[in-house]
Length: 298
Image (tube, rainbow, N blue to C red; front, top):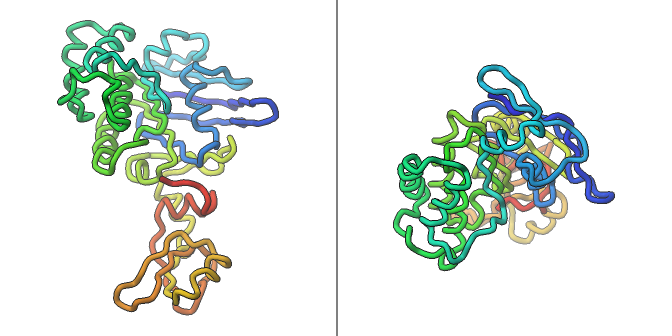
């Protein structure tokens, strides 16, 4: 099973939201990583046929090796999709359970199968204790988890998740991340996010997107390898913090309890000071190296 995207382009007036995007997805988790406005949601909406591309082609190859243009497949392709939009339209007067049954009906899932799947999925996203609660009474995090629940309903072959952990607390984010990882073995899962920790350890490949253009595409360990010996711990006096920020890209500021000095985490091609020591880079370090320290990562 393969999803192939070839030279997809989408513009809004003079603004190129997606520019000649090409990639091939097989089974596993892929991450679209980039700051707000990088084109992630535009691509998600093109893939789910909620938005038409100006040019380019998307093809799907099934397990038998048959390849078709997604536009020609129409409903047959949409039946293979599970989509979690960034800003879902939910029905405030529906209960959680009724909404799931409603989505099951829209997806054409048989009653017996829906009866089996719905409790399992609600338990997985920690909503099994509120099946009778109206959606309008749910917290933002609960609505987010319900949106994920409807996306995975029906066991779709392709799962497209736009900012799946937005609004969740750390415990819920870990639970959702683990759940996505568990169900991804026999699916193509594409996650659009700007939250680096959500995908650092579960994505097989990370596509870094900037202003609609792919600036890098590789497994996480290959990306971090590119900045080995470019991440430094730099002890300094408090009075030196601002001058260091003016001169270098500082990604973290902490207090060293043993020495009382300030400890900076700095991205630099060369050793910033004589007392600087290199540290192992993280994916967040590479994100900031590519996009700049003003790009949001949380």
